[in-house]
Length: 361
Image (tube, rainbow, N blue to C red; front, top):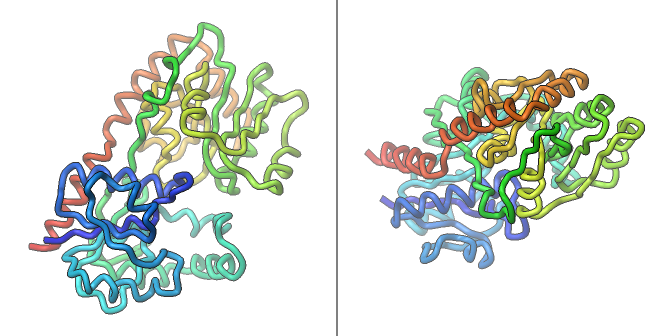
C-alpha cells in the first residue's frame, strides 16, 4: 500500500489554518508510518517535511494544471491519496482518494478570504450559493474527512456527500516551549485580553472591541495581520479611552508570551471549523471567554471556558469579569488542559492511517 499525502498547502513563510493542519498532520503521520510519500510543489516545502521523508514535486495548488493532478499522480502509482483540502483535480484518477472539507462557514458567510483576488472572488461567491458544486466535488472522493465533530454533523445535515465521513481532528500546538517564563496569573483581575484570528465579518471582532467600554483598565490585543481598510473600519468602533492594540501579526513566541502574561483568551466568532486559538490557549493553561456555540463547546466542554453571547458586548464583558477571581481562573484553567488533551495530532494520524487501510481491503 502506497499512501501519498498532499503537502502542497504547507506555507513556507507563516502558517495559516490549512498550512498548520497540513504540517502537523504530515509530521504525525511520519512518526507512525514510513510508507508515506509527500506531494510538494517546491524544495522549500520539502525541507519542512520530516527528516528522510520521500517527496514528489508537482505543480502548485493554484496552477492551471490542478484539474489534471490525478493524471500526473497516476504515474507514481499511489494506492491512496490524502488531500487536506477538497480541490485536488480528480480527472482520470486510478487510486483511492480522501478529500477534506474543513467546515461550512462560507455557505453562511460568503465573504471570500483576503487572499482571493479578482475574478476568484466572484467565483468563490457563486460556488457557495448552492450545495451542488460541493456535492459533485466531494462525491468524486472515496472518503470525506473533516476536522471536528461539529463540522461532520453540519456536512451530514446538508447532505453534502454520499461518501463515508471521518473526523481527522485538528489539534493544538503546545506553545509552552516558546515561553521565556511560565504562564502568570495574579490575584488582581487579568489586564490583557488576547484575540488571534482573521478579521472577516463572521469572526465578529466588533463585539470584542465594543465590550472594552465595560472593561476599563484592560487591554485588548488583536494579534493577527490586518489590512489597512479593515483596521480603519474597526478603529471606528473603539470606545473612548479603551485600550486596543493592533499588532498586525506576531511571531509564535510573541503570541505565546502574550497569552502567558496575565491574560484571558477571547473570541466572539460566530463560525469555526475547529477553533484552534481556543485549543492552544486551553493547552497552555490560559483562561478563555468565547462564543456560546457548538464548535467551541466541542473543544472546551463544560467547566473549562466561559461561554458568552457573541451578539452582546456587555454579556461578553461580564464573561471576562467572571474570571476576575483567581480561584475561578485556576479551576477553569486546569479543566481546560484536561479537556483539550482529548485532541492530538498522533491520534489524528492514527485515524488517517486506519481510514487508508480500510480503503485498501
